[in-house]
Length: 166
Image 1 (cartoon, rainbow, N blue to C red):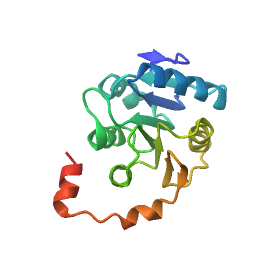
Image 2: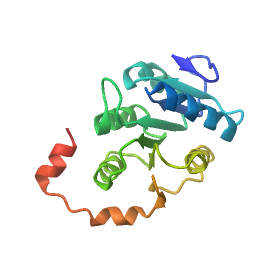
Image 3: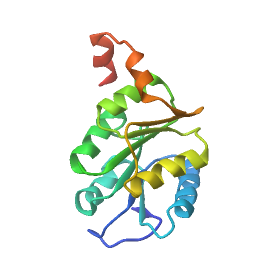
């Protein structure tokens, strides 16, 4: 278990970051440690290694990368959502396509943030989530905040939706 602030097993955790890219996760943790001064942040490289803590710590916010080793995508999102039904789920991804954003919201995410978003936008979303001020759904793309209502304009066939769920 990688941690920013070490916590006793079962202790309260404000944010869990599940991200495998070393450079990105270090930058994200640096950003969050400033934006969320004094908050407990735990870091994991994949869903499977995070599961023991997720079952016991009841985190407030979970930042979940969609392209992880092992369990990934909306399957990972659903599994984490089952273990932490009360946590605010924020997905982070290098892909910034409306179909993927829609699939994440359908799978239980309250926010979708592009990895290419401005640092202040990422910090703002996570801070609002931790403080209980996030009004979902929230979509932060490469170009900044987007209107999630625009996602309703994406029309997919049943087969396309089935493939997205894989």
